[in-house]
Amino acid sequence: MDWFTSHLDDVWELLVTHAYLAGVPLLIGLLIALPLGWLARRFSWAYPPLIVGTGLLYTLPSLAVFILLPGILGTRILDPVNVLVAMTVYTVALLVRTVADGLGAIPDDVRLAANAMGYRPIRRLLGVELPLAVPVISAGLRVAAVSNVSIVSVAAIIGVAQLGSLFTDGFNRDFFPPIITGIVACGVLSLVFDIVIVVVTRLLTPWTRARTAS
Amino acid sequence: MIRFESVTKEYPDGTIAVNELSLTAPTGKITVLVGPSGCGKTTSLRMINRMIEPTGGRILVDDRDTSTIDSAELRRGIGYVIQHAGLFPHRTIVANIATVPLLLGWDRAKATSRALELMERVGLPQSFAKRFPSQLSGGQQQRVGVARALAADPPVMLMDEPFSAVDPIVRDQLQEEFLRLQGEIGKTIVFVTHDIDEAIKLGDQVAVLRVGGTLAQLAAPEELLARPVDDFVADFVGRDRGYRTLGFRSAAFPTRAEPTIRLGADPSDARAATADPWVLVLDEQDHPLGWVERERLDGPVNREALHRGGTVAPTDGSLRQALDAALSAPSGRGVIVGPDGVFVGTVRARDLIEPIEASAGHQRVSTPEGVGVVSESKAD
Image (cartoon, rainbow over all chains, first blue to last red; front, side):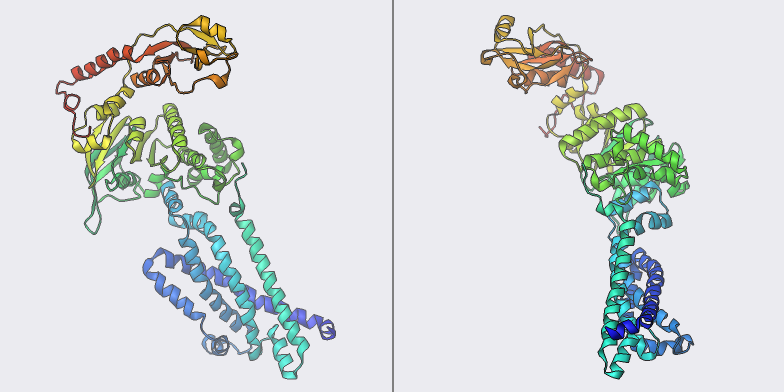
C-alpha cells in the first residue's frame, strides 16, 4: 500500500496510456469490423473466408506481432502505433463474426417489411439492421474490451510503457506491490470499459427493456 | 388498377411458381388471391411491388409497367401489410407508422401528425404512440401494420395473410374493421390468404389459384359459391356452399309481431304478455336483450336470467343472418332489428324458406347455362 500511495502519479499515467492503447483500437476495430461483417452477411461466398480469416488473426501470438509489426509498418520498435495496430487487428478478429451474426439475427419479417416499405440497402442497414444488431455487437465488444486490456500488457516486454510495465518491474526486482497494483488496475480498467459499453448500449436500445405495460 | 398480363415466375431450378397468370384487380376493390400452399399466391403478390421479379409477362399498376419504375420508388407508393405485422422492434409505434412518409422526405412533424391521425383511424389509443411493438398484442401490432401501410396514402395496398397469425376472435374483429376502413378509403387492394372463408368474407372478387401457379377461377364470392368451375374449386371452396351463399342474398321476408317485456318486469307481467314458454326482453330503448323462460322466472327479470343463444339479424341483412337468428333462438323465432338496433319483429325459419327459394330461383334464371347450381359436384 505504501508503494502504491507513493507511486500514485506513475500508476495513473500508466493507466491512462493503457486505456488509450486498449480503447482506441476498440473503436477503430469496430469501424473496420462493421463493413467486413456486413460483407460476410451480404455475400454468402464471402462469409467463410472472412470469418475464418479474421478468426485466425486472433491466434497470432501477441508478442510475435509486437516484434514483427515494426518491420512490416516501418515504424520504430518503441512506437505506440505498433501496439495500436496490433490491438486493432485483435479487435477486428473478434468483432467480424459478431457483426455478421448480429446482422444475421434480424427477423426475416422485419427485413422483408423494410424492403416492402421501399428502403434502399444502405439506409436499411443504417436505419434498421445495425440498430437491431446493437445488442449482439455490444456483447462482442465487451469481450474484445477485456481481451484488449489483457493483451496490451504484453507490450511491456518490448518496452512500450503501460500497466504491463508494473509486471516486468515487479518481476525484475522480485517485488510484489507493483504486480498486485497492475493486476488491480487492469481489473478496474476492464470494469470501466465494460460499464461504458453497457451504458451506451442501454441508451441505444430502449426497446429491449420495453415490457408490456398495459 | 393492377393488371397481370401473362405473368410467369420460373426459378433457375425449373420450378414454376406462377404460370401465365392474367388478371385485373379493379380500382377501389378488394381482390383476394386464395389457394393451397404452393399455388404462387404470395409470389404473385410480391411481384406487384417487385420484391420478386417476374420472368415472363408484365404487371401494370395504373397502366404503368412496374418494370420501368425504380423498385424502391415503386414500393414507397404501394402499401404493404405482412403476416405478424413485421414492425420495426426498435422504433416506437408512431415512428413505425411514419416510416414511409419519412422515406419520402416528409418533415418529421408532418409525418408524426399523420401517424397519430392513422392510429386513431385504425382504433389505437394515442397513449400507444411512444410504446414499442413488443408492448402490444398481436392484434394491436397488426393494426399498426395496417396504419403503417396507409401512412403515405398509397392508392394500392398489398396484404399478405395479414390476419392469419391472430386468434379467431381478434381476426374476426380485424376483418370487420378492415372492411369498414376500406369502405372509407376505397383502396385498390390485393389480399392473399389460404383461408377461403376469409376470401369470401373480404373479397369483392376472389381468384382461386391452383398448385403450379395457374388461375382456376376468378369470380365474385357469391358466384364462386354458386358456380365453382371445376372439382378443384368446388373442393377448395368447401362444404355448405348453398347455405353460405345465403350470406350474399337478401330479400324481403315477413316479420311477425312478438309480445315483449322490459328488463325488471315481474313474472306476472311475463305470464300476462304471452302464453308461449319463451318471452323476449327489451331494454328501455327497445333494443332486444334476450329471451327468458317464463316458468323459470322467480323474481323481476334480470340480465342473469337471459338466454344468450339467439343471434339478431337486421332487416336489411342477408338471408343467412335471418335464418341463423331463427335457428339459434330458443323460441324458434328469430329476432329482427331495424338499422338503429330497435326491435322490429320475429321471423320463423319456415317463413324464410320461400324467400330463400325465390332468391335461388332468381339466381338460376339470371344464368341461362345454369352451371353449378343444378349440378352439385362431389364436394358434398
